[in-house]
Image (cartoon, rainbow, N blue to C red; front, top):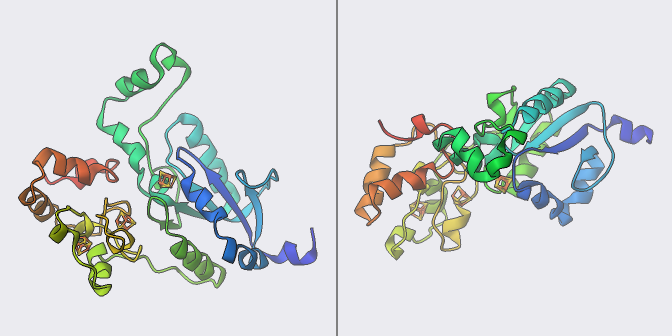
Length: 254
Ligand code: SF4
Ligand code: SF4
Ligand code: SF4
């Protein structure tokens, strides 16, 4: 290793229960990858290299925690990392994986593994912050690449990244998009945390809520709007739970 590499912050990427889409997304950063490598030393990244490291300045974590071995491994990474960042909905909020938490865990285990279920210990799917301290979260399914770059630059500059907390609707209105409700679709933009530049409505699609809920979502009003637009109450609740099942007692109105 050169002296220059020794002085660069050591960055590592780890995957837990996930589709690995957030990590793959990073490998698509062709235009920015060389710039990034000038400023950091990537010391561990299973999808791209075989090297391993003992400690990291920044550990990026993709995926939810869903087995006892995940719990052990995330504690080990946390011990070795100065800073730990959760990447993508699975890691920040349990993501789609947490839908399994809506069923009794033993039934889920049986449905997936059948007679072999005793060989596969499982836990309810959890965000990384349920087990260890997380220093920052980058939301989205997949996480947004511009946001990833923005956060990385802030961290390298020693600044606290700013967490977006306005609804997707705000960004959507600023872009002067036609609201998809006016096109016969339904959209979770009013209660979903922005930061993605309202990318789905900007391409004519509805927001599925992948960045999780804003701090004070008006869930009753959201359910009312969805049902007024022809969605049954049951279906409306399921839509909100798609990315918010981990905290489902909080995600749904009483
Ligand atoms: S957040 Fe979405 S894209 Fe990222 S790992 Fe989870 S399921 Fe895949
Ligand atoms: S399309 Fe969705 S995000 Fe955009 S204004 Fe309408 S409800 Fe809000
Ligand atoms: S518009 Fe909604 S679904 Fe699309 S990326 Fe943003 S938060 Fe996710």
